[in-house]
Image 1 (cartoon, one colour):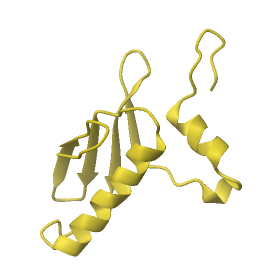
Image 2 (cartoon, rainbow, N blue to C red; image 1 turned 90 degrees about the vertical axis):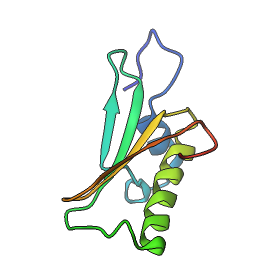
Image 3 (cartoon, rainbow, N blue to C red; image 1 turned 45 degrees about the horizontal axis):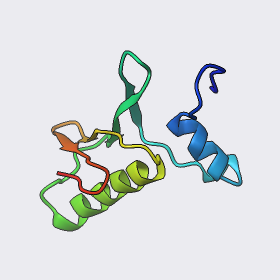
Amino acid sequence: MIYSNQQTLTWLEIRALQATNIEDIDFPDIVALDKDEQIILIAEVKGLPFNFQVTKAKKYAILRLINYLQAAKIVIPFAMLVDVNNILIFKWDGNNLS
């Protein structure tokens, strides 16, 4: 939603504007907002146990998070990978996920 008193678009609005078709929009599974409705965390959720110890699988999941974070064009400070057994939380500084 575009608010008349704000000059910025939300992350979801930016992604929607960038997509040529609604099917092209790829969203994170969870987007958390702070009290000022600024995005502070995005999350990728897996319904089955996801083996975060497998380097290739973990790398792919992290690359998806980085793609979401870079597409936002704003710094979203945290990202999270979740499955039924694990929650991994990362800090994003605009360039690096740690």
